[in-house]
Image (cartoon, rainbow, N blue to C red):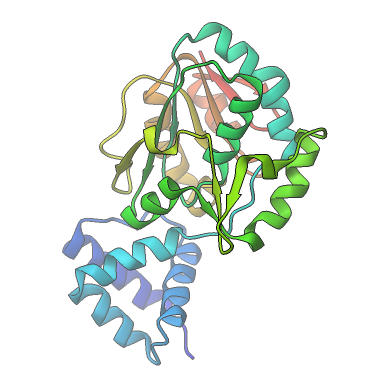
Length: 273
């Protein structure tokens, strides 16, 4: 099956912007082409042209595309050393400074970081009251996050990761299985404020104390990363933390903007100054 060519991809981006107001022009072209080709395969459309026509003529199909381009595999406690640093160092200091902190997960693909943090907090800081904001371009993604459902096959790598962070505990103590899926219990997923947002995170919550934006910057052009980081840090309180993915390099941004202090260079944890 032929893939969607670069010229056609650029035309699709313009058409989506005109039709729906979503501007994907700041995405790396390779990343967006992959999302298009993947959706074509999912829907078993023989020709890309059929997919494009349906994308632009059927709003429900476009909403499904938004979900498909954000859907990804779930691996709880991914990058275990990051979670060990959060557990032993960052969160104790963070919770000493902020009495009732607000933590934001923008541009969510799945529940892996949110759920990992909720489990960590329930183990280490069960009495603390924390407000959570979660946002995504896809309403379906937010519904799945709020359900707290994890498939058995998604749990395999998560079990290994969990043991590296909590060697004496069993992740299954947080789970309840109905035979088909696992539900995480005792975690206030229903109390989180879920918000569908556009590609520049609008509407944006005010005054946040910690932002998780891990492994998302990779999909943007280098010049667009500055704009994204400006948006995120504009909502971050002084002394608040920004956490990005361990493979994401924002050294140039930190050097030029001078609004973030490097707290852990390896785990890509920063504090607003």
